View 1 (cartoon, one colour):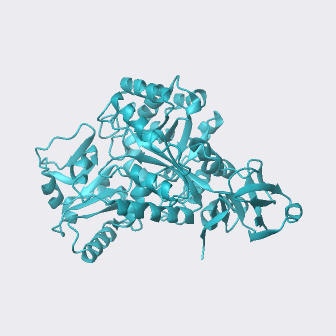
View 2 (view 1 turned 180 degrees about the horizontal axis):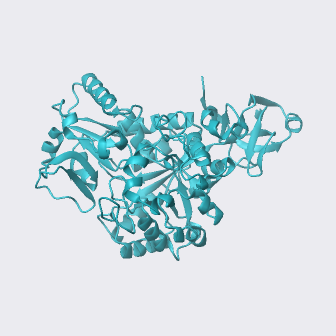
View 3 (view 1 turned 90 degrees about the vertical axis):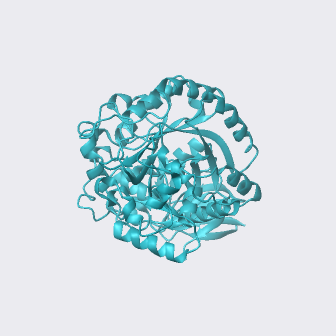
Length: 533
C-alpha cells in the first residue's frame, strides 16, 4: 500500500510548498498536488499543518559513546557543582558494587576558570573518572590519580596536559591525551554494552528525526573502545536502520604506516547496506577553553599558541596518501592555525573524495575563500555560536580582538560559495538538529537550553554571521547526505523515503521560536521508526 503525506507543507530543493508526497515500497514516488496524488490507493499520514522534511543527517557525532554515557553517571542534563555532586552521589549509592564511578557530561562553565578539582569528588573512596562534555578533558578524584600513579613528578604527554596547582600537585583535571592515563584503566564495556549503547542512541536519534549520521571517531580515543565491531555486527544483523558512515580514527602516535590498517578496516565494511567506513578522522588541535586549540598568535592573558597534534609537514603527506587511497578526510579544527593547516594539507586533493573540516570556531579571514576554492565542505556545529558562560568567560577574554570576531563565520563562508553540512558533536552538545538550526538563524541560545537564562544568552553572537533557515536545514539534510554519499536527504522521486514529520512549520514561525518545533514522526524507507506518544 502506498503512503500519502498530506495536509501541510514540504521542504524540497525548490523550497517550501503546500504539496503532498506519495511513497511506494519505501521510495518517494511523487511530489505534487494532493488532488493528483490522492487518486492512488493509499494510507494517509496527516501533517496537521506541520512540515514534512527529509530525515536529518548529522555529519559529526559520537552515538556509541553517547549511549554508553547515558547508561553511566550522566551529568549532561544538569548544570552546576551542586547538581553534579548530587547526581554523582545518587549514582554511587545506586551502584554500590561498581569499582569505578565513570560517566561524563560536565560543563567547564560550571567551574571558576573552567576547572573542577579532585577534592570535589573525594567524598567517594572509589576512583572517579568523568569526561568533560566536549570530551577534551576528564575530572578525576584522588583515588583515580593514585590508581594511575599520577603524581607531581608525572610528565605531561606530548598531546595533553595534567592540570596542576601552584605547588605543582595534580588538581584532578586531565586535558586531551592525558585523559588516557586514567581513562584506559576504567572497566571496559562488553560487546553487549556497546550493542545496547548503539541501540539506545539510535532510538534517541530517531526521536529527533535523525535517520543517518557520520560517527566522527570510530576507533580508540580518550579511554573509549573501538566501535567498528559494534557497527559491523549491527549492520549485519539488521539492528542498524540508520544510514551511517564511520570516520576511522587517525592515531596521532603513528604515521603513514597505519594507512594499510585503515584500508583493511574500510574493507571490513564493504558490501554492507547501512554502514561504510570510508572516512578518516584527523584531530588537528584541541579546544580554546584549555588553550590547546592551535592559534596563529598567542592567547591573551596566558600566552601560548596551542597544539598541532600532527606535524603540519607530515600532515600534508598523510592527507595526500589518504586521498590517493580514496578516503574522505574529516578534520577536527578549532583554532585558526589548525584550520589553515587542514586547508594547506587538502590543497591538490581530489574534491570527489568530499573532504570536510568540522567545528571551524576561528577562521582567519583570508582562509575563508579557500574552502570553496579547494572544494572543501564546512561541517558546522551551530549550537556553539552563542553567548554563554563558556564563550563569554572562558573564550572571549583569551582570544581578544580581532580574533574573537572571526568565530563561526557561517555567512562569510556561504557568501564565498562554500558547501555546508552540519552536525551536533553529540554527546558534546544536544543532538536535536532543530536547536542547531535555531542558533544558525538567530545566533542566540534556544529556550530549551540550560544556558538560556545566562545574562547575554539572548544577545545575538556576531549577528552578521547568521544564515537563513532554508540554508541551515539544507546543511542538515542534503548537505550531510552529500558528505555521506547517502541516497537520502532530499524529497524528490526516486529517493529513499527517510522522512521526518514536524509538529509545526518552522518557516512560518517567528525566527526566535524555531526551537519550539518538535518531531512527531520519523520514517526510514517509508517505515515508521518513531512516533511521538
